[in-house]
Amino acid sequence: MITVTGATGNIGRPLTQALAEAGRQVTAVSRHPAAVPNGVRHMAADLAEPSSLKPALDGAKALFLLLSGDLHATGANPADIIGEAADSGVGRVVLLSTLGVVTRPFGPTRIAMRALEDTLRESGLEWAILRPGGFASNALWWAESVRAQQVVAAPFGDVGVPIIDPADIAAVAAACLLDDRHTSGAYELTGPEVITPREQAEAIAAALGSPVRFHELTRDEAKAAMAQSMPAELADDTLDILGSPSPAEQRVSPDVERVLGRAPRPFADWAARNVAAFR
Image (tube, rainbow, N blue to C red; front, side):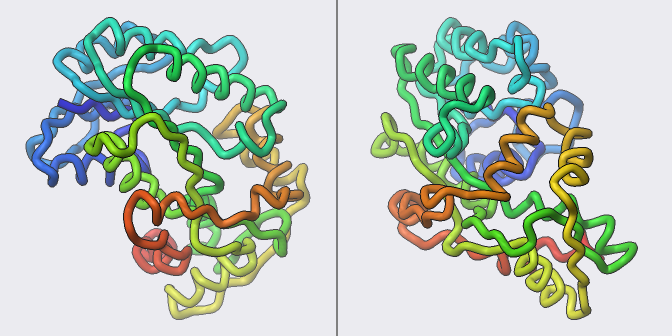
């Protein structure tokens, strides 16, 4: 049995589906009750209280660990989750980390995530670490303004990074959970091309078949919006990357293709699959 945390999100949902389609027993974990694929068991747990995860780990051989936003905050101790997994007999953990532990290792959230990576490596469990950059699904922040005003509002309109489709992260996670060849590795996950927010708006317009205007926000305006859904330090770290990406953050990684045997999907594919959110 495989336990998937964050199972109702943009990564966890396709990962749960892929594991179920592969014939594996899956326990889908989220903070609140939610619909899951047929044959999948759902359990509610709050990862900020690692002991609440115990029932979902009972009988599990592998765990996909995706931290909720509050576990990135100062004072959180997500390493306790790895301890709970080991105590429950879990043999393999696939951790969703971030590319920033490599490209910006001294930010507070990056230091904490690197420490969690180290805890996993030293746990005695089989492990794999996924380090994605920006997510294509972050464009859903713009869905309401596109629906209401046909506008995308974002900072740094002409600065690009190779954002990744969450479905590709899920596919790599499934491979790491199911295939022994992909353990004991850290994978940098990016899309196939550097793309700017302005170009993302154009791709959304193409998927819709109607114009979408781009409006450039200041950094302060963007931070105020992001801080409503994530710790302010994480918002600052994210904006640092979006505004002044390093060469390493603009690099297109070969790791998705190395694991999956195919290139990662471009943003235009994600926009076409998710166009209903913008209508």
